[in-house]
Amino acid sequence: RHRKIGKALETYAFNMALPIINPQKQVVAVIALSVNLDGLDKRLSNPSLQVYENDKRFILMNGKMMLNTLAPEARGKLLTEINPHNSAQTLTQAHIGKQTGAYEYNNSVGESGKVAINSFEVFPGAGKYWSVGVFAPDSSIQAPLKPLQNVVLTSAIVDILVIIAVSFFYISQTISRRISNISNALFSFFKYINHESKTLPEPLRIVAHDELGKMGLAI
Image (cartoon, rainbow, N blue to C red; front, top):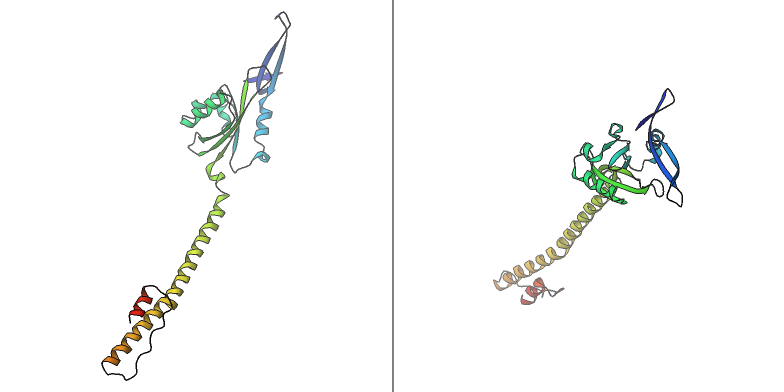
């Protein structure tokens, strides 16, 4: 909540009071603490903390947004109130369950991304838990992959072109030549039996025992 300090200064602060209990279970004193959240907000907004482009940091307590570098006006509001998406409900349940992990998340403006939260107790025995989180858009997370995708795509295209070139060379230099030799042998043989030529055609040289080789053997 906002609190006034003195006559002029107003700050956004978190207040906590813890009783000191003696062995007879009597309250003998109270320790009070006030945390200036405006200063913490400036720390969370520090550009040096940025890992991904347009990532945002926030703090949750009791399902409410205490600090949010993306939308300061969301302070004190339930996360599910400012964001109706199902992912907000999932994140709230993880926060209330004091969980730490990464989750799929769609923010209040419809931007998809990932959220990582770390939940911890504010003060031992206080029973108050905060969850510090970072939201990063999918577009920023996947940005480093784009150059790699371009390299993979280029390599695939080059590989396909090389395979096509090798296949073309093999077909033109091997199969086509063998078919041409068989064709010439057949024409020479027919010319010989039709008395168009007196030169007996030379036997075909078999270089492989495949379909073309079988044709050559038959001839």
